[in-house]
Image 1 (cartoon, protein in one colour):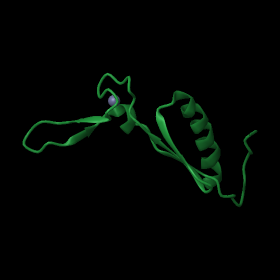
Image 2 (tube, helix red, strand yellow; image 1 turned 90 degrees about the vertical axis):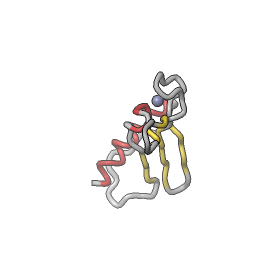
Image 3 (cartoon, helix red, strand yellow; image 1 turned 180 degrees about the vertical axis):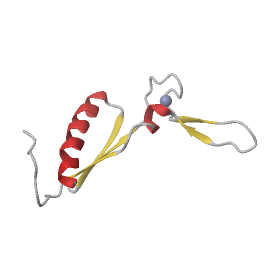
Length: 87
Ligand SMILES: [Zn+2]
């Protein structure tokens, strides 16, 4: 399962890095991509959310980042490597 997930994650990460709306964290063990709010977002204007009104105010997460999944790419060698990426 992990051997299948990693190439998929790599392909997804390659795509989203070009978008530039992700926070990249990398060390020797893993690369972690966290979605961040878009500055051009018409709803939150880059703040990532807003406070809802009412007697119990709550922070509402904006869909421009909350609906995107986090990506974690493990860099440790796997026991059964699948297709190696060309880089
Ligand atoms: Zn937004």
